[in-house]
Length: 96
Image 1 (cartoon, rainbow, N blue to C red):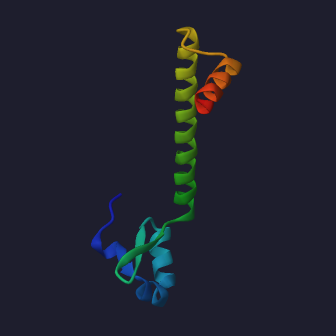
Image 2: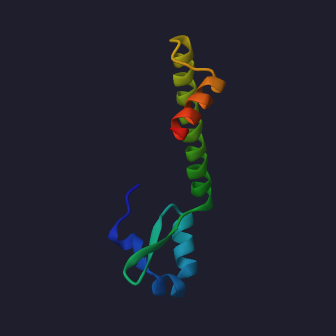
């Protein structure tokens, strides 16, 4: 869903017409409220906000699964070092 020019409103208009805006948002509209001509806040339905948060959690889970898969590929290809050796190597480089 795109944002049209009528969905961008100044803060003063939002204050004066909050109930009307709330009804529009509940019906599916999204509003961008500006302050001093700059984007300030967005008004969206709470169910849609929950959905956006769910999508973000799912994206994070997919990224973690991808990173775990890469790690398993490294183990399978023997591109690993044991932690003790790696830490000792880092300490030696820092002290040099």
